[in-house]
Image 1: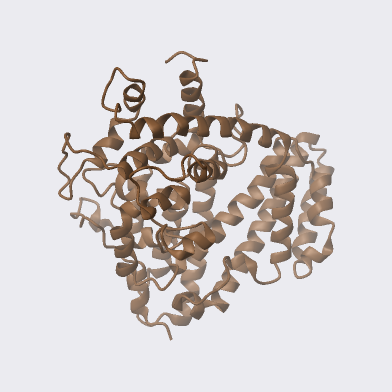
Image 2 (image 1 turned 180 degrees about the vertical axis):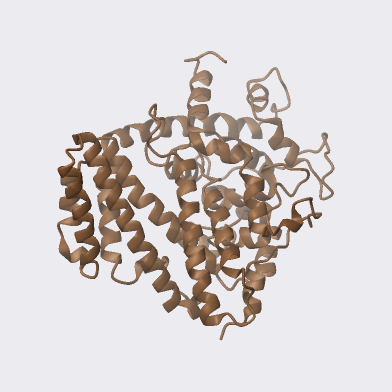
Length: 466
């Protein structure tokens, strides 16, 4: 029997800086709803509208960006929160408050909204490029960095950067950033260890940087996490369901795949739908109705893909809820061994096939591969310029090339680096080599796709400053 007290800790409303009750505090908002209201106005969230989901640097306004993907993940997460919360309260709910399902739903709603906040320009490929740059022979021994500090960049992870943005970089009033509650941060910490941990070397994944080590440990302590936060499994499932089926939809809209192709890959094979034949037949009826209505070809393909997306996401949500219930004790005790709640049950063959179709038609099509070559030139070029400049002895000299480059970096990042533990700014403070490299990574990883491309072109002399 899981004690209700565990959920009180896991949904901890505590914050690094205790918040004073505001005028709206008595209006029934949970701490997670307050977190949502804080971040929705932030510049970090707005930048996601120009960061790639699959197709970067798009001139059309249809294909998804990181912002639209995050909104969809947020909505699916909220649904999963309500579903799981009602089940938990019904089966294990002695002592849990009546509004528990709503609180869990609000936690997953805000976590879904911000889960990709730390992704650099050009999506996950941008993460790979940063890691590759630091693993390169000439950069694998940056002077002045300890092995623990260097691991932050060698295994750079957008999830850890998300924690850093929320806890430090998205400045509100002091060094605690936007000051999210520990429950939200715990759910966002997909890998509850730092970059120097053995598991980071094995998996190439970690949850917080050396600079946030004390905060990471405090989040784990305040929430009583035993391994991953249970809500993290629900968040990752919402993320997977959001991007997999939406990426298919975008691929059809881009013209890289039509309905006949989708049907042959995903619907015609009855083995994928063994336990879902009724859903498969309902999908076919929706598509047949489109034919009878003589919907124009381009719209027909898109709408048929849209119905497939809805069908797949509904089946996925049911499967996730079922697996969460079956594995509840293991999840709560930190002994659950599957990476994802979608890896179990009869829906897995369908999900695996969707992943394969996305790889074939979306992630490896010529347009995406061509744009990844552009991304490689941009991100690598920016790292080649800014990291050496920040470590140069001439970085303070505005007449030198290094000094000029350093002055292109937003002063906000340096300001945050020079705040002491009392949030007092010390302009004369000298940054360590680790802080200098992190300053460059904060700057580059925070760029939108368009800003990164335009800055790269200006530094090459191919475009003039605005």
